[in-house]
Image 1 (spheres, helix red, strand yellow):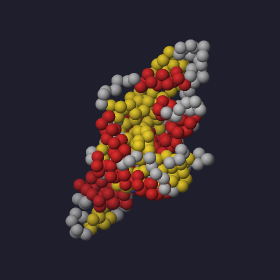
Image 2 (tube, rainbow, N blue to C red):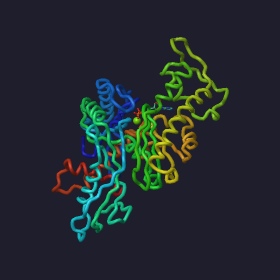
Image 3 (cartoon, helix red, strand yellow):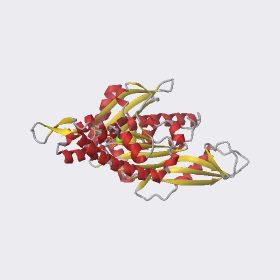
Length: 411
Ligand SMILES: Nc1ncnc2c1ncn2[C@@H]1O[C@H](COP(=O)(O)OP(=O)(O)OP(=O)(O)O)[C@@H](O)[C@H]1O
Ligand SMILES: [Mg+2]
């Protein structure tokens, strides 16, 4: 693929989505092709059957290749699952000669020192994201390069993943014939696609409700302060309908998507929908309000978990921009109203926007992670190009730096 062409693969619990895109001269993201197919062998964001997962990923890649006419050699992939954990960590370094300005090298040393956290052998650091810097006690420095001081602190958000869960995912993608360029935490990717920089500045929570996981990222003053992955999602809502209405899973999934609502009082009491029943016994009429009551109970429980998690990241008062709901289950009727009620924060649905090319299908909350991964790839590439000099090879170190620094560089 050409230099400016990128590929991203979102290996979800219910679907695998591969997107190929390029940057236009106007710095717009143009989608060249999308390949979506059902997922297999993945549960709660983690691989549980390698062969089934490889087949599902390979088929999504093949569709994207056919649609775009590009051969996908490498890709950015998203990761989620209960094995993810995150913490905030401070790195501190002394500046050798305070008469000289702070350099990118000093920043790198500070970040490396923040990275040296107590990580057990079976975990890997996937992100060290700078939140802000402190130069000789002066707080909230966004970019310390060029400033003078004798001590540089960096406050970072460190995300770690279980080594085996991550290796299994990478193996599956590589087994499908594509090299993994970078592994990105799914909610950070989703935020890239559906959260505005201004919202991040004023405090916002991103909540990606997928099939098997609900991924959270909290941003305050433009920087990520908390991330988490909860092992619940839309599949639980579907299963509740199976149990409560005694209908097959496929029928439950279909009525949920078409007629599902989370506020029973907004559903007409006399509304009924025809639903397939078990066996080949034709259809049954189910009151839509009863469906809404089932969906409300589960969604409310899920949102209570989100509320507890948000509290761990920030006080609700600092989230002036509220919460952005995305992921497939964000399409459930009335979910933003229920979220406003449970979380006591303004809520909106986040759909990927500002896309050119073959992007129709992607304007749906379910594709936030895939589009976000592509945007992440693009930014990393831009940072790499900016930080490279003709003498410097575009190799591992600069690449890693780009990964670490992307959040602090100006937009
Ligand atoms: N219109 C809709 N109404 C309600 N739920 C929906 C709708 N469309 C999709 N969903 C639900 O969204 C879920 C899938 O979301 P998404 O595609 O974001 O998940 P995923 O990325 O495959 O999984 P995960 O992120 O959990 O690994 C499914 O449970 C599906 O039922
Ligand atoms: Mg997902």
